[in-house]
Image (tube, rainbow over all chains, first blue to last red):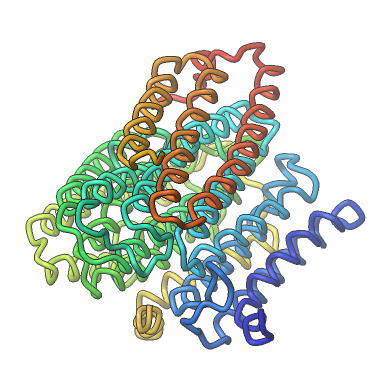
Length: 466
Length: 102
């Protein structure tokens, strides 16, 4: 490992050192200090990643700072920093004490940063699993609510099965090709059937991670049980990481025709069932869970085209979805008092009694529905545009129709916020950290929606060499 | 004597199917589910070692060593959670963990 390797992997080093520092020095500091240190380290790592120029040669076995990493690491870092800021007040109200919460978030960020740097399947798989491990702990962190631990156990059992299936797929791909390197996934004659079987298992495993129908059943329970800021981080970064995992495997391998049908069905069913099931939810977090299933369906639609347009739409949509969902879950977290504010009717009138948070929640809902000029519109536009250009016209039209249906349940929340009288259960005042994080996310939604060119340019450069 | 790759894969596939059947059939008991997951991961390791010997490369063996570490940490995490839930509910029966519906 030379000096230039160390420089190019500086974001990973910063995050790794910060996680250990937070865990070891945590008992001697106030939680407030620990949170600020964690958020600052995450932002520093993101800034470093954006500033360092990418190299494609592998300096270390299995790790290289690729252009894709240069795009994904800042997104993950900003998401983790915002989550830390959002969860500080929430954790105080819910008595989630101690330094292990920020430490686990930073550990999770470390794994997220390793994932796009991976150049072989071993590193890729270990990073994906390390992300999942951190989330098993984070989901079960709220000792005050029985659902939290239950959700953690459910997530762990299903995640472990999914990990075993993914690992079996990767093992079969290895047995078929004889290499773990991502660039060389072609099978010699006579081994094609093994490779195809391997791809099938990988798809099933990733369908669990991305909660695509029919492997989606864990999602609503886990989102409902998890603390709201954790649910926000889980629904954004871990999904985006899963999509990046699949994108890296697909983009480096030669196109495989037999993957088209399974991806088509996964996308169709997720868009359909996600949107239709969200219509009849009464709990906001469950509704957001079904909405994330539908959004992952859109992402799969862009991914299955296999074109460069499709891949850039995936990267764009992932970043936009991260901002929107962090805003939505952040507002929910900040509006929750000692208990969790769950039912949609509990949000009645909050647009007036808590103007900032109600406004951010309404903005996030409009963006998730894909109404211009929000970021969600740009994301959906590029997904469907790339799908139509990639030849998936029927599925794109079905997707647009389902997206139109989805406006109903998103707008229902906005109606509750602004057109219903307020209930008795008023929220606590908003802390400065929470307001700062919420303002950042909503600025992100509006700015990307009005002026998406810089983000589009970043996405283009992320795919330039990778 | 070398064992052909396909024989190894058939054995691994059988083992994997048995593990999966165990997780699905004994869904009522968390401990049995963990045992099933363990069997599935052992099938994965067998495949990796088989592939490794087929291609004469150590990559697969390293992968299976990493998987062992991963499995043990997974099980320790799961057991910690089972113990914690058991204290709250006095049960390892998954049917008792049903506070969320919809």
